[in-house]
Image: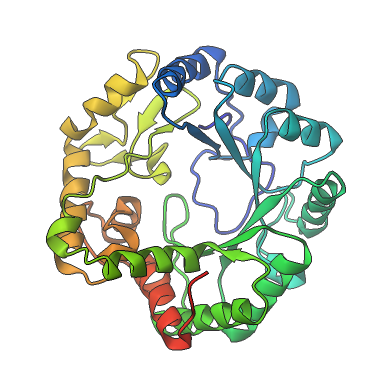
Length: 353
């Protein structure tokens, strides 16, 4: 869910195309999605909503409170935030709606140099103030860090930072050529393998923080031990991951398509919740040409790649923005994250969490 397009920061590696614009999600868009969520919840399904794509807190406490209040009480809400706006009023909202927080911060001191305000000033002190507010209210939070220089020293610094600030879990992302950001990080797969091996070693020494990437590696290991074959992998459904933009447009397979247009197929959308119910839109999403091409790419990966059980063969946005095709296979993102995190685990022989 995209409550608003605007972000109060201007991070140098951000991929969002419209983060400079101030556009808010109208109540009728939120209500249309919440109505479908209520049907799913009433049928016994768990419903999770991730508020992202811009800085969700930039829409203001009252507006976001009205949006969240419209959803079924059983909904699990997560907010991905840069943390700079968090104060007591926001903490009240987080606790009232039982929101799970994921804060974007790349580590201590200079490691956060690419997270800057719109005037180009470092945002690190404002991020630290937001984290301090969460700790003062005993509100748990996860950490999401973008790494541009992957090596053993960086791994140690990022892990120590996550541990020292009290993060529950740590997620890692490489700098990506995606969306509005046209540059890939210069690091190689070997650099990333070294990084992940060192990160897992740090965790072995002091398993105080859950590692998102290590958990996905262990899920892959469990699948392999359970005897999942390439043929069986083809039958595993592809997660649609519906993303609803501020204006009600729906995209699938990757939130990173939001706001972008394919030169042949047009906007990366499958419908709008103001025109049709979300469940009906998702039921017909596979009919769109760009979705069919993306699903072909998933099948290609699952058929040919030995790492497919790590990522499921998905991530079509990275394929498109790196290679210009949705039915492509291996990308730099794949090598630097999914392949490297697996090989890093094999290097240090990390036990299961």
